[in-house]
Length: 152
Image 1 (tube, rainbow, N blue to C red):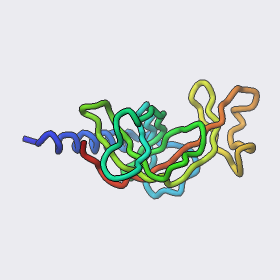
Image 2: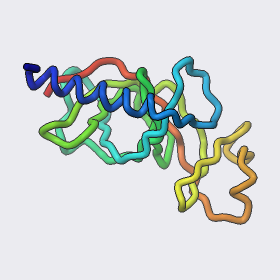
Image 3: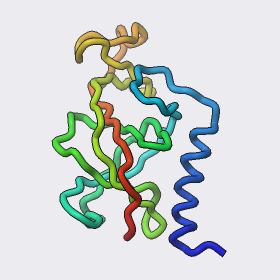
Image 4: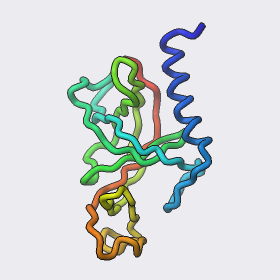
């Protein structure tokens, strides 16, 4: 029988495996060797300012975009002013906490239906012609690499 801690770890890795093996690719610029899979869900993050976990009150919801075995990405209205964070996958008390570092930030446009266009060479010139004449919100796609699993 698995301990509670091992069951939580197994649940997290099962989530990643399900997303990775879904067979749906994501078509946008990538420097990763790992294939990205869509992971459209609201999760929570907090800035990591030291060892241990931030207080639950410091976590804020973010819209996740994709997931790999090595990291994930999410949207913010502006470029983050932090380098490391803690991501909470799921809700307490079953939440799985993982520390991560910001690896890259990309300017994107997000339309009301959730479509995303990535910048070709800056925030003004976007890759998708589909956004012409439609209202879209400038956002920043934040790509993170997992560092370690944290325990509550």
